[in-house]
Image (tube, rainbow, N blue to C red; front, side):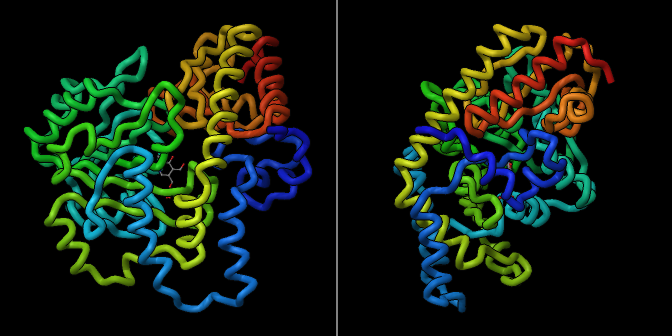
Length: 384
Ligand SMILES: Cc1ncc(COP(=O)(O)O)c(C=O)c1O
């Protein structure tokens, strides 16, 4: 597919990715793709607008949950009971609401770091206590012993990210089994954010946590959404499978409108994504996988001081600049001196010193322009 030549469309976008830094900067930071959405998603939205059909409508909202159940069954082999599903306005909405419902201020909440930074703010902003468990290097592996050693008597919840942002890890069966042993032994609640599930690069395969470890079903809330795989983050919609019965009761008793939920338009678009857009997803996942290899090949060939471990999933590269002259905050230097916007590694935790996160879900022309700027800056020995 020819994805080159749409600079004008990208420059005209009003989203935060292409507007925050102005026209001289190439954006490769926030996790939105540069690809135009699939036809059926756009048709679902425009047909509602054309019909003037923007009033209350419950069918689409109800369909959302059963559609997700069918989607995860087809995509990942996970069978869920529709009665155990809830809709939310986004994955972070679900994550925060459920974490807050099941804890009190001061309780410990585990993070495997470096980690997608809103997880940490969710804990800190609600007065819970971060239990920071570093992933093991090299390879960003889960270390179950380190996890168990970090637990305090009042640690109640784990915010799990699988596949993992920013490292792109798809945790394997061995890691998940050792993780599950600790969760069971210590009777923890796991909120597993699986919004990247549909973007694993072959031969890697995402296996939902509760499919890999069915004994965790009663301990786990699984979050899914179309936002990453189909590039519809702004529409605001997510689905949660709530395994623990006490949490289902708590959600049932909670005032409905305080929890909120997706709009009819986001539900319609999400249902379209999960029922009519397989070809689009396959085509774009192939582009993303090729881009991932291209980033690796260019860095290895032209700039080997920037280390790159190919992500097993996601369109995010967790780049290691620690062997370069860029210092602890390479994204800041690259923004100022190279006109390219990456996400700052330090936002993901102390392990992010000397790292930056690159979003490579774009067309080849933009990706090469971004890489040209990074490579030129690093090879010229640019400093903070
Ligand atoms: C792991 C992860 N969870 C959640 C989100 C955001 O989800 P939402 O916009 O549905 O709250 C992102 C966005 O990049 C993410 O990477």
